[in-house]
Amino acid sequence: DQLTTLTGLDGITTVGGYLAIINNDQLTTLTALDGITTVGGYLAIINNDQLTTLTGLDGITTVKGDLRIRNNAKLTTLTGLNGITTVGGGLSIWDNAELTTLKGLDGITTIRGGLVIRSNARLKALTGLDGI
Image (cartoon, rainbow, N blue to C red; front, side, top):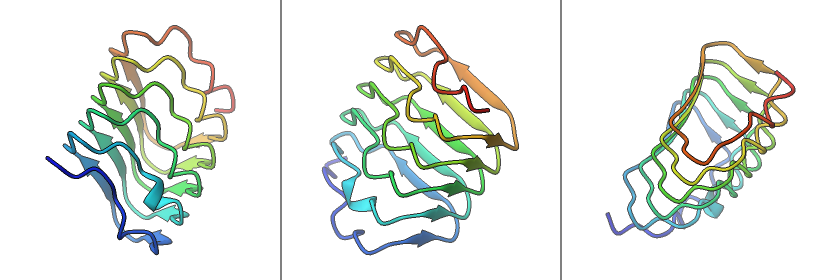
């Protein structure tokens, strides 16, 4: 519950399986992950109450499984996911109360699974998914 940074993971470039950042009430930044280019399984950012942006995930170009962004109370933007072009599974974005834009997903051209966007109270448009 008290994790505020991911410092110590700075040298990782590839995650062979899934990357899950879940239930970190005090985590404010993902910048230590900026060396990662590929996630071999799913990428899940879920229940991180203080996270406002996904900056730090900028280097990721491929997620071979699902991309799940859920229940991040203060997340306002998906900036940081700009490099992703392919999602090998589904894309789900839900219950992010302060999310106002999907910009940051602009680079995605392929989603091989389902697409679910629901219960994002402040999201008014789907701009950012234009390339799919």
